[in-house]
Image (cartoon, chains in turn orange, purple):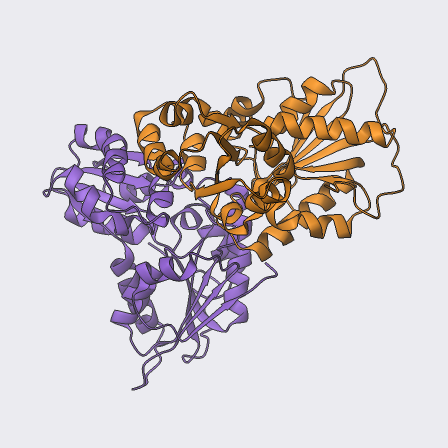
Length: 278
Length: 278
């Protein structure tokens, strides 16, 4: 699996930050894992909160938005870009790798690798936005590793608004999960990829519906490990005894912003700025 | 109530179209009423489907998006602009009236007028997006007409995704409505403003929860009447025996587009184009 693009032979300064973008704030779950694993690295996060969600939009729009987001991060001096958004990773990864000369890391391959390691009966489920499911990228990534796995994918468009409404623990959410996950239970999957950055916040309710024996695959930690490996390979780690800084940029800052950011991250933020022009 | 802006003394050619914009496709409910009332007029609709929804975003973004949308319509030669989106009507109406020299018609005042006519006990409810509720514009418009009315407003962020998922008639939607409408039932409102263009598609379930005696106020027809009145006042009606054309422009055309457009409009569309650059 090639995560390094062909053009990324030039190594940026190691004190440049790790760039992360997402359609909104969900990608902060990836930031949390990066901070745990690489505490001395600086991180620049960009959330396209003015155009969120991506998961209901067309591939053309998702690609266009992703290029805009990568350009924002490049302007903030980053040494690599983590595409935390599953919809962007599904449609825009190859375009971004062609277009930019720093490493681009997506979330699909790390999630697929972890699911393959966890499954015993070779029946894997994928839940994600409509865009991610329609792209077929998880199925492709899983089959690339092991052709014999059976993959069942289900789009769950209401999960994101339910999380953003703060209803993760309400009965309604369990009822919605019951409807969406019915087919996956019937198919007897034993590993379920949470293919959207919001879904880890629904782990409790999803686990209750699917049963304890089904492993829930959250790719955030996997992605952080891949970033670490890549930085080591490229001898591009920032070596410092100081804790790295986290800077967050968004394209819109609605009223619910801080509540949602807090539920995803739960740690100190050094700077938050809103870029109005995107 | 001044719907004509100060600068709109210059009358555009009467064969110019009526422009309508919305954050997405919900505004087609207004188009439907315009076609019924003014069948010979041409209509140009713009839905900002690439940045939908507006109702969870900041007032600054809503204003910026609304100006973009009005400029798209102006470029298509329109003689007036109907702001079908409640969030845009709440935050951007005054800015648009300042900025453009054709009449701008919003949905808040027509909805408020109708609710005041329908209420008997002077207790009026408003359900809308978070942005519209937070703006307080419905309360302001209602109190401007009758200071003595009591207004209760509730944001219902899950209604739009439920409609777009095609779940309008599912039990889940009734359960969600039960939660959102609880306070309005307690307050004993007898007129309820459906303050979002998606909500008329939930009339059945909302009516079931609120009870038959509560009048549901859908401003689409009211807005169409205001457009007619304004065109007559300005002697700006297109007089033709031919049926007017409907042209629809969107900023993104996701896979679910046609299904959603059909459920809102249910009539012939002469042209649909996707403008990618917005």
